[in-house]
Image (cartoon, rainbow, N blue to C red; front, side, top):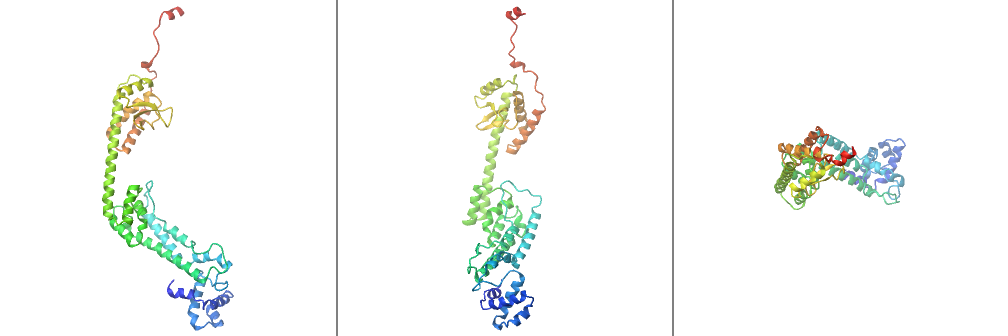
Length: 379
């Protein structure tokens, strides 16, 4: 709404004439005939016409209550009136087109676990049609004045302007490219007053979860004036530190698996008690054969605190456990020291064990004694 229309809608001198003209038009008279029959003064003629154009457009009503306030019957229709405001209808159409473009750009791209998404502007535009914070929930006679209703309409116009500014910020294709300069992208966010979306924007475009370390860096950019290039340097250094830390951890795990395989290589029995003693003796108590916490029937080997080999393999016998550990030691030789590499090696080792046939008899653990004189007497 421009200032002329606002002045017309709040012109209390024109409203009584507009009320009479509206009554005549409801009875079938044209606008010009109704104005002529009511002898509208020239001083308010332009304002009356503007008021009636808004009424005919369906987003305004002439107050029917006392002292130009809205009646109880009108109160129930005000939300529907605001939803028909032309600027909101245009916004919904524009937001729908924007979301379609956004979906097309993200076609075939799965969102990473924990990654945030930017607001759905079509949903925001649709909600703006009925979200009237100043409108009283219940009608009170004389409370909803003409000026209040015009202010409510101006609020919806401000919301529409705010949502449109955000869409304009994200409209360029380069704003959605993860490889583009983050410094320039953040500068555009700042120019369009969208810095409050910085965390969600980085998470959505880089398709990653923002942890506490990176969140603090982004808050420094948003609130404390940190240069975006400094943020990128700090985050790159932190990523490198984490990669090195993970590699050191998995190198240690791979070394423990190799050591475990060396202990179990060449065993002559798969008896659980014998394996337990061998592991304890050869590793100086570092390795422990135990039942899995996930399945009490399955066997695992604890090689370090809270880390067990074979936890997800469901190894039911000593034969399966020994061969799984040997197969795992072979498979990790072709994998990088990473979590994903370890999982791949575990899957292949499990598949190798599944193809083995368990020996029908473990002769090394036989407790059968040789015959003696009592056996001969019994015979």
